[in-house]
Length: 384
Image 1 (cartoon, one colour):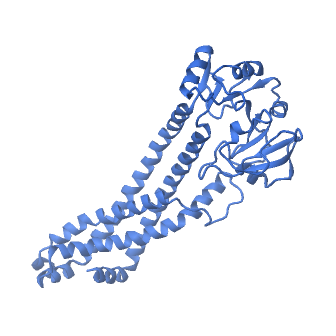
Image 2 (cartoon, rainbow, N blue to C red):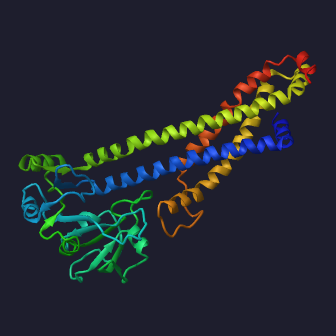
Image 3 (cartoon, rainbow, N blue to C red):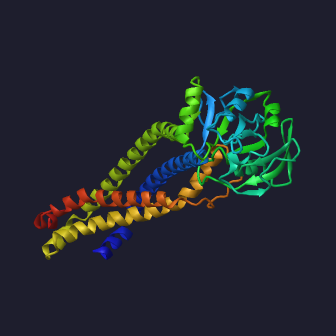
């Protein structure tokens, strides 16, 4: 039956091409939607990893990264002196968006992270550094860049670059932490706290205290102690980061899944209509096959095989085009230095799309196959 399906597929090239294009468009759209969701979720989970085991003392109502939080440096030093805080592994920190030129159209904002020199590991401990990872003994404009920031400004260790009126010297570049949507750490520019305060015009102010609890205290113990002592402030923890991820993604997931469902239904209807046309065109052929003793399940298999072949070809083309289409989407959103076909589509997305192709091919052929089985051999032989 498979060879008969291929023969019919070749004979009706126009109809087959229409069906393949429909499946390809469906796979491409669903695949890119799922890819965007995958990258966003992966990126946000990467931020969860950078917060792991730490607490962020912030002004109420802020989150991670705490660019909207402003507290006094004196209060931050008071928090560092608490008995639950490991002051050697904790630091005052200032997070701020780098003010860039209006011509910069990157969709990845650069985040300034000002830290106490010698306490850099409180923020960058989960990365490896090309160059040096310490600001101690360096010039006041020394910076350690996240991977995305280095790529954005096309700089490496030893280079000097300028953003508006601010000049920076690169002493280190962090390895990429996230595999998907850019993380805060990947898009960061780490510098001394005093320099960050100067260029962001926030003298004696910080955004947060990055806290590493002492060994004898759990993160929850430290959080409770600090919250009791400072009820007007927030203690942002790993659990809060997870809530932020869920809140950020929930509405987007619902919207994206509705789009995917709509595309899926349209694709199934398209293939089903094409296969029903195929059944109608083959009425005499099916009647002849039934008259010479061909079993009903063989007739059904013939229709489903043809549906699966068309879906498979369209699905493969769609999967192959996912990478360049995703790159084009990145360009439209402001990404630079895009290398087409170099983006590796995650295997989880490929498996998901392949499953969708199989479901489309199988179920869109069921009703036409059922109709084919109901054809009476005598009536079919008289069909014109």
